[in-house]
Image (cartoon, rainbow, N blue to C red; front, side, top):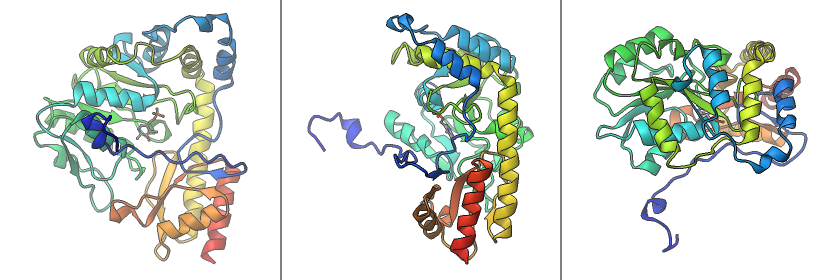
Length: 353
Ligand SMILES: *Cc1c(COP(=O)(O)O)cnc(C)c1O
């Protein structure tokens, strides 16, 4: 507390990211990073960027990157907004598109950054409980609102909502913005980007942190109607004209263009997930159906917090959420390499014995 703080700062409850421990030899399965590393072509593009041009500012509009993303997703470049990680994109989304008289709606169990942005920008929100099976029920969102946002697949539950249900939500909600945060969609979902030309209120966000394995580069983007994109650009250009540096722009372009690497690594993650789910179920765990690069699992006889601590003693880090109470039994486990998943299952077998 300091008398020098702005009033809003006194009231902030910042987001707490999963830890990035500095210890070597950890099996790190706590922040949903991709175990297979970025495209070698992205790494080469980053290396090529080291040089005298670093004295110059980067392209403020990230035009070439937006073109690469537009081409990949078959939309126009003026339907693409890019930011310093999708967290920054989402911050601008809350500021530019979700700050209205009515409350924003999102699930009670979801990405915990959403209420933080609401706190930062003074936005009212209403949390809509997931069903008993941790699913989003679209009917619950057909009420007056200042916007709707949720991840699909949802985090930390890993469950996917079918595209037809998202379309039903859009049809029942024509007058406020619907944001689908598709951070994990490449691991098992169908993207709602194919709906943006029919629904001007739809904005879809993506990140290169998970399926493109570039969490360290900080690149995310949003796709939607040009009017929504213009709102985001207005906020961005009132905040930071150069959110993506030269490395981020070059590396991200190369990553978007390396289809072969993308397909190969995501197929490996999906295969590892299926094996991990089967192994966990054989140990007695209940695992929610996952369409993501992580699983959400609980054991009928062992508490999530206790298992998380026991894994940590064996240098395996997973994520546990105390709140809300109905997810406290669970652990959220990132799908790692074959060897990392085996280490996890071996450790759990030992702990349960
Ligand atoms: C990881 C994640 C993000 C943020 O991704 P960055 O691009 O790394 O900022 C956004 N939404 C959800 C649901 C995520 O899990």
